Amino acid sequence: MNPAAVRVYAEALLAVSEERGETERTEEAIEEVLAAARQAPELLRALDFPGYSPEARAGIVQEVFGDRLPPLVLNLLDLLGRRRRIRLLPDIHRLYSRLAARCCGLLPAEVTTAVPLEQDQADALAAALRGLLGRSVRLDLKVDPSIVAGAIVSVAGTRYDASAGGRLESIRRAMTEAWRREGGAGVRS
Image 1 (tube, rainbow, N blue to C red):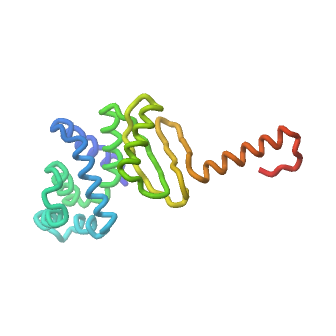
Image 2 (spheres, helix red, strand yellow):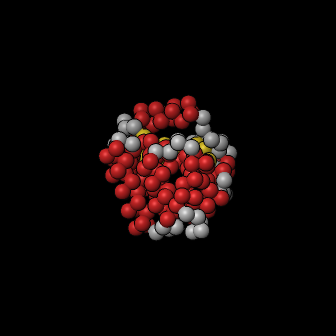
Image 3 (cartoon, rainbow, N blue to C red):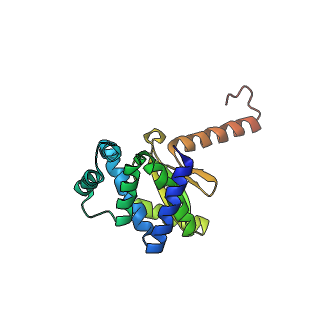
């Protein structure tokens, strides 16, 4: 990754999207591109392939997304493809999201769950966090099956671990501490 290039692209993208009133739509469109690339990794390779002309790359984007992407995102994909920097798109998106959230007064909240959240679950979580923190949040949803159940939320420098493993660890610590207070000898942690 080239952090300086990522920052230049993300900041320029934010400046133009704010000017056009398309900040949220731009983020959603890049998310759509990245989701498609997760389903078909060859998409980003094709957009980065030096043998394709700009017209061929535009044709690929048109074939996959139709008219669903705003011109700003189409231009970004074209620019990254021409410069063979399409691999920076996930990092550009990540930084763009953080900058946009800060700009709009939203707290970024990273949420990791064992399975993908349904939209109503994500909305309920965002509302609960808004009540807890007194500010609106922008959820960055991730899936990690290793947490088995529950969720881990990182927001404003604080980690809230409501995963099955986190709960079991909390119970283990509480039981160990109680055992020690009661004079239990030979307790293993």
